[in-house]
Length: 630
Figure 1 (cartoon, one colour):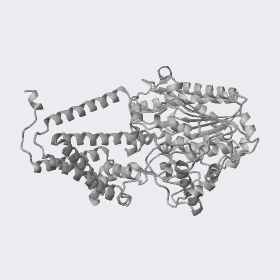
Figure 2 (cartoon, one colour):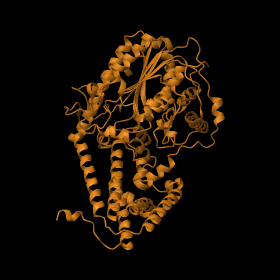
Figure 3 (cartoon, one colour):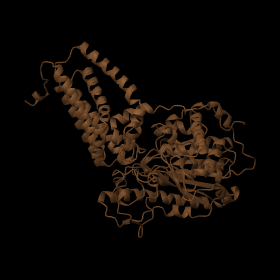
Figure 4 (cartoon, helix red, strand yellow):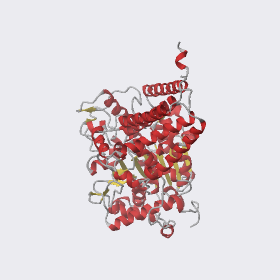
């Protein structure tokens, strides 16, 4: 009797029943996606009632998908079950990503499956168990539905015609609907329309996803002329005897100043930023915040901005910016190599993550150190990743080895990884390491405790590096900054509970703050004397609020280091920064701290030049080899 439930039914084929089942299946799948992903359901529902096209554009992909599977397999029950499983997986993935990164599911995420699986391995056991249970349940449902599907199927010719019709309909709809930017932009958005999560929330995950699939192709900016940039670009014109201090640049994983909050106290505990704050207060130090391209993730985009001087936010694509680097490009390491610097990159993660194994050499790094060849996760790991101490050991050893073997100055760039999320029980069971006057749940308290624990480790190593530089006779400039704010599994709840002035739907200041991370640039006594660091700070004319776009940071570093004539692009960036320290696709911030959406004509022209220059560097420029005769 048990085996009888796995026997196929033997019923006469019915087109009416088949079509009705397919329609209902697609409708149910669409509803499930909306139920799982939609925020503010009442407000979104009102917009859908007045714009029913939104429902249609979310329904049709589900209908075409279930029809295609049915015409291929001829199994009605299985086709319906497969659609539900895939669409639910789709929706849950979006829900998790929005919660942790405040970013919706994008087509480009499909290109990062390997990276995503690596991160999933660090999830707490209970989360892995839930994922495992869900996967087993889904597989069981699909196997059962496949076996139980009816024997009677439409004729082969009908199935072939059906497949052809589905493909043609999909191509036509894609061309007329999903590739139509004006149609998509014409639909309303509940709350801030510049926040992509809100676009998905109102217009639907499925419609938005397929629209993104069409617009992620990168095209030349309007009016782009390659010859304009051929004439603009020139080799370094650095004068003999110009300062060339060593530069140690570090990007801290999820490094932020969330510990600076009126509701949080570290009295009786360890301040997670004690050494960082001491560094910022030193003579010959400048500090502030950089406005990056992502929240809760997108590490490589911040790397790209800082190392190239090019703005990810103006690439007009959802792809990670590193995806467009396929040859040697004009970047900070390349330029420094041209004037005699030894360049090295260090990342205690896998070399294939974001394709850094190929991207770093293309950026101009002569030597690269990755997890596979330079670290031992078994002995140096904590919380699933290589610890801060081992990373700093490598930074110092590479620096020592380089200055001992060469008289050339050093530029080293490091991406730390220890404090990568998720943070649920990341470091095991920990005692609370802060106090607060806000009532937090056990989970909320632990998330912050885990995060601050990693920050404390990072801060300890910052102190060690500063001590090293202060005791060194070598001229050293340290640059430290965060790649993005941490993405907690409870989304923005912790931020809201503790009244952080960060809100993707708030004031311009609150929206920009969602993407702000700290930075500091400091010169030891030898470097400060060599390059006139104090005078350079004055000339740099940094804004009073200390906020600059991340793509300015590399050029700012060269200006403070007294390295003139390194790149005409950097000269332009340093001039632009003094007028508009923040440029983004949401808000611009001028030197007086005013938030605006439209730029003056002359600044817009410069921004257009920068956007075109980015396209030129990525796709059209051919570089001579680093260290070649100029």
